[in-house]
Amino acid sequence: VWSEQVGLAWEGQASAAPGASAVVRCSWLPSRLGDVLAMVRAMRAECGVTLTARVATGSGLLRLTGSDAAIAAAIMRARLDESPVGHVVVLRGSRALRSQVDVWGTAPSAPAAALKRALDPTGILNPRAG
Image 1 (cartoon, rainbow, N blue to C red):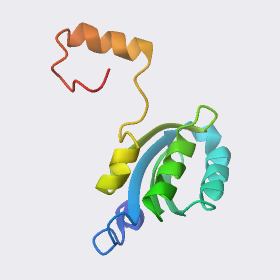
Image 2: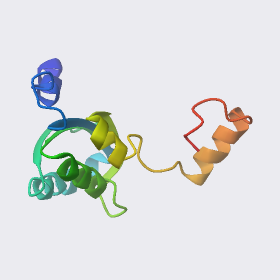
Image 3: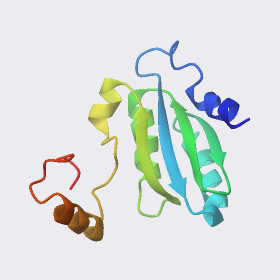
């Protein structure tokens, strides 16, 4: 059943016109599900949205359709500080979209950056990530 649900997010990727869609992975606190659904409804004013989620674990995939600018705006909305979503990672999107948004999201928190420096003092592992 889950593989069918996940397939909904990826459906049409091969046949979609370049820049017409993106797949984004999100995570949130399960208690914030109502807020996440409200955010998805608000995103629909900017672009097409299909949400496939595991409610109990607070994770899911968003398939966003529309122009690159509309998809980028929806991703930025999900990454706002007041957003109920904690992590937003672009899994698939056009080259133009990836030039407009950082696919990995915001910079790591101070503790995460300190841990990375401790484990990778020369910065050779994933040098763009803090």
